[in-house]
Length: 424
Image: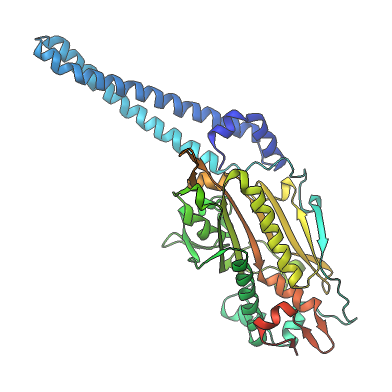
């Protein structure tokens, strides 16, 4: 969440940034934050003043009694009692103001960086780069859901029987391809210096609030109500929360973690051709990259993460493009975000496979994730994360773009992981 210092010292800039994200009533909300913070601070000041007076009077009462000044001592006792009663009221008011302030701050998104373009939605995102190999498919090319049926790779109907729509069953070489991609992505991450983590796929509410999924994405998360736990929408949540309430040493940064997990998203309201097959699932596999860094190094970390994801798509021989997201299409928590999309030749459309984001101090402030600098002062870290990569649409593009009359060709980089060169 935004810091009070950020809001009070750069009020106009914060409001402009929130308006770029199309946050409703930005000016009024920030004004309310400042008002509630002033109330909290004034109450705290009065409480501190009263406590100081209580301490001072308490020290003098005994001396007054020794000097035989009984009336003055009794008056001091009465004043102490009065102050203590008043402090109960002040303490309640301060707690209420602090809670109101925290709840307000939870509703405010991160402020985008200056280089984030203006825009309302996906149509306003800026194409930064295009790359990869062009594909020429047979005239009778099939979409991946037909290929999955033809080669018995994925059974969507069986998933509906077992669970419901959006929970496919991978079979035979389809399952092997999934496992091959997971191992390939993890090995590539390890080669780039990331330490692998195997986190839980269920988290508590504190973890959801820490990375900003709560309260913003509560309706999209599967909630285990009896235990008040949530199925993770991404490994970003448990991995980043490793560093909640932690003070790191500057020498530890940047921290680089990767994790493979299953991910769960309700995707309420999703329907139509854009969600057919693997295009949008409720459960899917993903390898995630997470970095914790110093503010002055986080932009370099962000670029290194972008380079890593691009390298994966190049090795998979897929046509891709990189988008700089506009303010209106960015996530609630991101300050700067780039999306990677692969082109599905059979569907004639681009499929998002990764978002690589810099959150500045937004998540770190929620998490209380700090580091101690060379001067032994503590500062908020910057957090970053990105998919490297999400599997469903990668599988869709691999199946569709590599279909031939002889079968589906496997990219060379994956052959050692799959154990076969063609799906036939």
